[in-house]
Image (cartoon, rainbow, N blue to C red; front, side, top):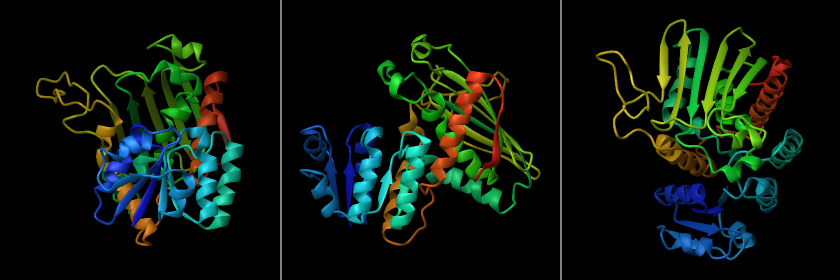
Length: 334
């Protein structure tokens, strides 16, 4: 099997290396709009070679992973559909709700698999958490807590085009938590502050935020996120149910110190960033993509689900700016 990778920046190169490590992948074909970048990346990767253009990438592969800049995602997805090639596209597949709605309709009309790269859905621990919720092992869900903090702020030049903290950082939790709970979100409240760097305010953004989601069945979720954690990258999801209380992302590398005499303390190996924290998720994401191409797995992250998280992110932004909760008529479908 041949897999194409469009875009070989940091995350595209990581995905290409993970694809090359799979026994079912014979070759990884690389393309990047920056001249020479794909050729350079191919020299450091097994099973890899550079494609001269997008046409060659599409013609000579069984599926394409899209990791080009966000504003190119809709065009790249449409090129894959026109060529009959399944795709895995990094989030978001489109920048706003209208564009995404149109693109989702085109994807579904084409009947060609398009996976969206929300890596939480591919994390083995999160998958197990969802299994326990679906089977009822946790009992009725009372409360969900999601924590997501970057170790260090992103490059400040990125802020004006990031889409803001809800579309960029917390979008992963706005995707994963409703997917886990399996119920529509009926109300959203969000608040944010600038505590890390005034550059966030200059970009009309915040660097710390909290979100409260109310689900149709009455359960609540609290999402907290920020752009700086001095101990390392921290992402956890905790679920309290009527039968059990469980967490993912809680291990010896979690950047959190306990003040209890016999409590855990973070060691020197705390997670420095998302590639390390979600290494198992990213590896499994590539395996699942290949399995979907081979007809051995269903798509766990379909394009339509992206409408849910983006709708919630936009509701969060409205709530933050107005200071009042936002009701979602009919709920946000799970």
